[in-house]
Image (cartoon, rainbow, N blue to C red; front, top):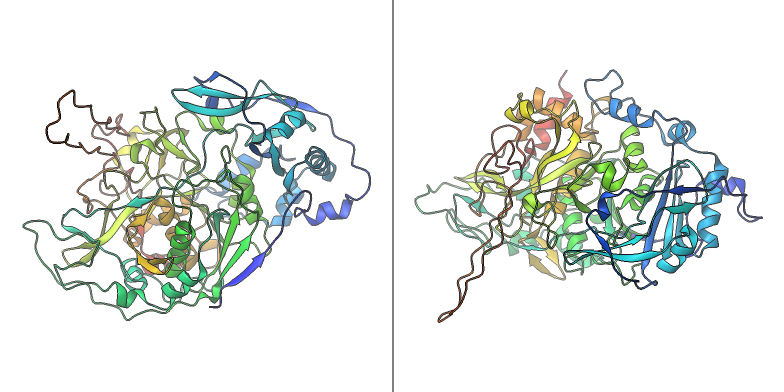
Length: 626
């Protein structure tokens, strides 16, 4: 096993600071604090909630403070740069150029670092761009630092931990405060997929067949760096990666003859035509020396990701990335993502600040459903997404695993989209079910009746670049940002190893994000920067010019559904039952304003699978053409 492991211990003020902070020196007297200020948090997270009672003050507050950039035109510059129709498209800048133009005075950053330390914060971090400082408080420490009181707020059985009123900060010119309200927890879904029959046979694919299905580039990803951000409470087992990489899946999960799918796979439906399967590629051995692990923060007992946290998630993500970009350097970064109230922005910033910087960042987490405008719920676009876009580093995120709900929340029966997927500065990956239909590789929308690909229409303005291969019907009616952008398998059809045995049928759109991130690395590796796929806008431009670079998902999947609406199953009452039969859960449909039957799949762009899935080699050929 050649996977490398590096450890970074972190506690108190033993955080990583930029060279700028080291230069000004923190060993002497603490710098004088800039003018203090008060800050009002976005209101939407507490809309409809009632303050109830005092809570456990030992709970963790994962707080980060973003300062207003020195150049107030940052947002406008970034949104123009990511638009393929703009003269400033792909006008990227370096990390040093970004900090020089937008970073704040070093004294403001030093003051914030000292402020965090003086109130007992741990895991303190200052970004290299001189705009973000974060750390972890207990509720008790946060109350003293922010000069407020934290209480529990409740609505229909849901609880939020939030301060009472505005908060006090040691500096002025604050753009946003992340994590001060402990509402949702970034999460992952654990999906066990049953297999009723349809014409699409869902398969557990070996790495070689999986690559064949996605038209993978031979030796893809050479010279590229992929940062996979995972939660530090959920570490993979390196021996599983070894077993996967040496091709054991070829013997443990062979494809059966036509009409005889392996265990876990759906069979063709009644009356369907049998056809030979695609020719089997030779077994593939993967080189794990390109994979490394890095511990950024230690896990604590408040981190819960929403699935079986014994390594499933990083195992699946690493295997997917290694399969699609076998020569890329893949760094698995274990950080404190799954904390209530966390948005992942500080974890993304730490990855962006790495030297050398990643070429692609995968953040496989859905933070929260979005029912309101972004700014009213989460504040302005986080600095990390702006910086990554301006430096030409795509961030790939999932569209969510609960269909039109985005993320299911107890007591909330409304359609939603997911944050951060809804941001126009990310590439949002929806979910499909990869399989075979009539002897050919094909995909259907991922919807097993319990989990489904997120997707829908937000309340955010639709970016100018969001058009598909044709001026699709929705574009005439929708003035808002739509998601997802592209898609990939979310049904767990890559045959991975987990704790020593073969496993399939465990997936989610986090898997889709890892696949898409690796595909970008493989496609971009041989291209000059001026031709690379650096943003969602670049994908739409490619789809308009070369629709053949995508597999358009237009048909039912191997669960028999055609959209991202969750279809609750009616459970029959037991024999001899007497009484009132409870009503089934409501069917929640997204997109009903433009699609009365919900977000269904359709030719070209749709609100379940976006443009479709990338065909690596075909996309590269199109981008290399004059």
